Image 1 (tube, helix red, strand yellow):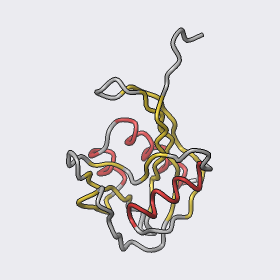
Image 2 (cartoon, rainbow, N blue to C red):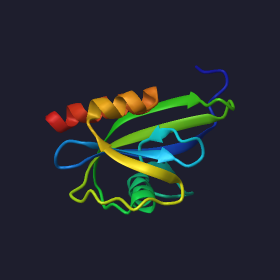
Image 3 (cartoon, rainbow, N blue to C red):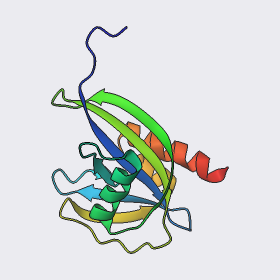
Length: 134
């Protein structure tokens, strides 16, 4: 049993595949790092509805959401608890309309996405690629 349970913000993100197999990555406004689109759940919000809402707000895309492909808990650089859930998703449209939270986007190969992202997000891309191949 864990002595001190993690108190964490929930973050939901999508590994979005275009028809050609490329994955969407977006660059944050705050520190210019790359990430998968998504965000935080609202109180009493359904998880799948929340991630679809966040993706639509950040990218303007409608996503066909699949199963979760990765979930992980950690502490960030400020020692704040985080819990992330990453979903497999597909889109038919690749025209992105970025929100103020991001300054750039790219559709890249899964390997290129893994190279740009944090370890938890790279693992999610790898896992989602395996689901896509099934």
